[in-house]
Amino acid sequence: MLAVAALGVVFGDIGTSPLYSLQTVFTLDGGIVHATTGDVYGVISLIFWSLTIIVSIKYLGVAMRADNEGEGGVMALAALAQRLYSNLGRRAGVLIVVGIVGVALFYGDSIITPAVSVLSAVEGVQVAAPAIAHLILPISAVILTALFIVQRFGTGKVGNLFGPVMVLWFLVLAVVGLAEVVQHPFVLAGLSPTYAVAFVVAHPFMAFVAMGAVVLVITGAEALYADMGHFGRGPIRRAWFYLVFPSLTLNYLGQAALVLNNPGTRVNPFFLLFPEWARIPAVILATVATIIASQAVISGAFSLSRQAVQLGLLPPLTVRQTSEREGGQIYMPVVNFLLFLGVIAVMFAFGSSARLATAYGVSVTGALATDTLLLLLVARPLWHWHPWKIILAGIAFGGLELTFLSGNLSKVAQGGWVPLLIAAAVITVMTTWRRGRQFVVDDRKVKEGSLADFVEAVRVNDIPRVPGVAVFPHPNRDTTPLALRANVEHNHVLHERVIIVSAVFQRVPYVPVSESFTRDDLGYSGDGIEHLIVRFGFSEAPDLPGALRTAVSVGALDLEPEQLEDASYFISRGAIRTSHPSRMTRWRRGLFVMIARNAADPAARFRLPSLRTVTMGSDVEI
Image (cartoon, rainbow, N blue to C red; front, side, top):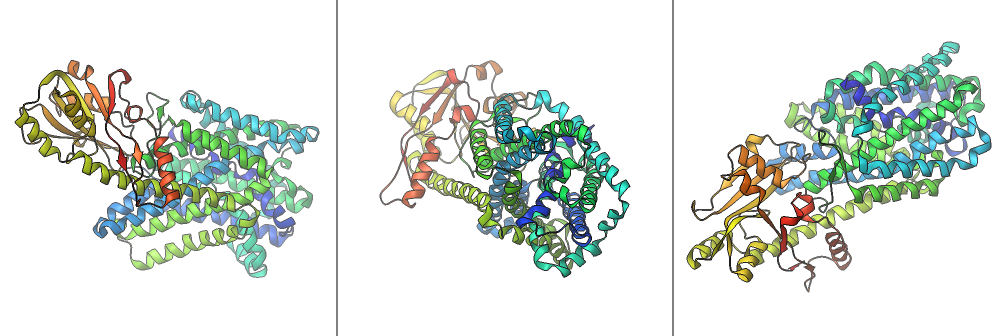
């Protein structure tokens, strides 16, 4: 059952690649790859061995062993690498920068995948019903708009349908491919690696150009690794080897046999595999499959964005939980809106899946190469690999991926610049936020002053106490929350119980309850002022009231549940102003201020009760 569920989430992207991959190879640069036996066998061999080396061996055989507390993906892998190389001190931060590059490329993938997938499915109308071919773009736009609108409702109610639909999809891929292979069994010879070698040797430039399109067959390979935490290694591996890999192989072989037998079919070999009566149903099924593939990428962007927020790489963003049972089912309005704008823009700008596929490869290959780099870095400390094994893996994985990347970089002028521009924008935002945030933290430390001195001053000055519990979210136990200091200075009172809570986000997906809380009475056990550290994994929702209730239930906090239900929450927040001279360039300073002003309300981020939350503080400078 887990394997079937994995089909609906993990394999949507790679499973819809047959819609456009082979078509792109044979229409590239006006048809540089010909429908001859040598070219077709060479392309099929490249496709089969790319799937084998990158997906079957690299991700399913090696990368899935490099999990971070059961979670995968470039962000989890970067955090794992940083932890393994913690002896390098601040230099280990470079590994997070590599992770930032991988995340940025994934965002480019998240924008192009829905556009190219849905567009390629709807383009089947050109084969099935040519009279309405002019409606391809409007139909695609309507489907994509509806897809992004329903994100706010979550995928919980329809999630159970995804797996069975994808089972049907892969079975159809296998059946139509097998039907053509049975008629032309000679195409099976293309599975031999000798044809790939012969193709490269005989036509090196043609093969180099073709590699830029062959990479499309492994789009979505990173999702196998990124979604490991949801389903586990076993179900994903079984789904791949028992159904997905055989179905994809048969379909690519069928398309190749069709092109060899009738070169005119290379304009759309996927839909021409179907008999005429089945083409309209095929378009409908393909559209549903591409919607599922797009949903998986969009959900992945939400999850990755939340991880980036909790690792301090993005500003706090509004996160809405769309399922009471599944923590990974979230909705992020800002991310959803930006993705929608990007998807619609690139779809209308490029106009066809063939042109979009040209731009697609750069982000895919860049993300694959980033994973390989981090994987090679963790191999020695994690598995104690000998240098020769690391070199061999680097040649096998990195060599192939760098060839893919080089082939796609040659297409930068034809649209490959789009994912690079998206990645550059994301990297700029992340690095600007990371740097500006550190300056804000430094300035706040000066204004906040020592917490130990504040507690001592409260005892000496005998500040009046009022009934109730006051909770002050604050990042550390060394300085005084601005809201706490402002409350004493302006209102001249203090609550009977003051709990300063620091939410700490660990570089692991989940933190056990036994390790989630650390209480400190700040030197005095009877003054009613205490500090509590609450640890969250980067895949957990930072629900502060919920965490405090858990702390009370496990005895980490000495309070009655009724007291906590009536507690007041005080947020320390002030306007950000620029200092003269500033420590950031003018444009970056302006970007940081704009991002900060549009960041999510901390009360919403930590799920604080709105009727019992007060915001206080003072200005900070960068």
